[in-house]
Length: 433
Ligand code: CMX
Image 1 (cartoon, rainbow, N blue to C red):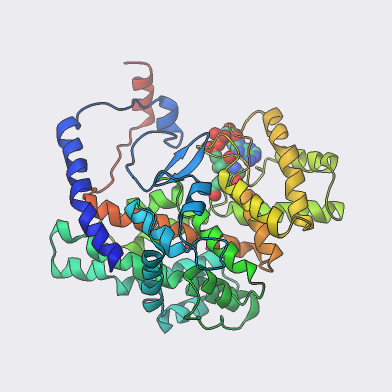
Image 2 (cartoon, rainbow, N blue to C red):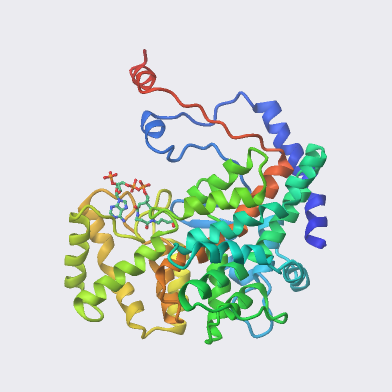
């Protein structure tokens, strides 16, 4: 396929640049580490390398150098569609080039050809039972497919390092192709006790997810594509992408890597915040019986903070302004559901909460992140089961993660192994002893 050929063309130069950098400048310093960084979650330490995306604290994410509006503008769309093909976006993440419609369609066609999920994946999900959290069901589904790994099989046969990226790419394509069907299965099984709609060969990857979910409103197809693109990548240091990179740096495959990443995504400080967010908004609306006033939100937010909880959907480890992923979803809502009471509530929350967080004085960033807006749109189209939302995040984030894992192999990135020290050692270093 063209995407694979394009990668094969690009890899030697990138690899030579990477190896050359280490060889020529390997001993040069690029940063120092403070006591706070060592003891406090490694915030901001420049220690990961990726060209897939970059997160500027003030500007937000750029995918291969393109901002979100630029990405949505530049990528090819099918006739009549509002949002570009996710297959074309995947091409951009891998190659750094805007594909033609034909190139985007080729990725879509490959996904279609590789999309059939083995029955044992569904058996694993059903064996867990409906009471299990959807992220557990989804993660188990992904992990169960590890036995299909081309990378693991080739590694067992024996291959050279230069060949590593190829089976990683194949695993990435195979896994991406199946994630929407697995997620739709989890959704229908857990909440409705039935099966997803059959895949429609005429629909693109994102729209087919909406179809398999059995969401009738056709606008949800556009939202699905937008959602997956927006959640795809946030450079490499976020917990889910970093976990996947770490796991796969041991030369385990993309299934092991992404199952690990999904476990990190399932925490409330990361991907699970999207479920917590809508739960918080619905709690707010229940308490005040509809769209609350600014005064009512003020009280509710302070009650949350005073009870020791965080306000979900606000704050970020890197960003220092409103997340452009929030803005993009807000624009979609303004176009498609401006009168929805939940959207109206989220809009008033946006007016009130940043000031409260500033007064509270703890959060370094008082502005909303991606999770503050995603649930509103989901519930509007009928996906009201908010504990499912992190699964949606898990489909989207896999796009960036698998592109990174393939490039990690292509560049020959090694096993990740930072150094830990003891508290005694840190004290001595801190005091300059
Ligand atoms: N509400 C209340 N307190 C908050 C807060 C919020 N939304 N955001 C940060 N704080 C607090 C932190 O808990 C921390 O308190 P302590 O000093 O008592 O530990 C303090 O402010 C400083 O935190 P920070 O340096 O600003 O933020 P971190 O890098 O430590 O954490 C994040 C970032 C996102 C985990 C944090 O802002 C948060 O908990 N937000 C709410 C949960 C959320 O929306 N997570 C989703 C993030 C996006 C994603 O990954 O999906």
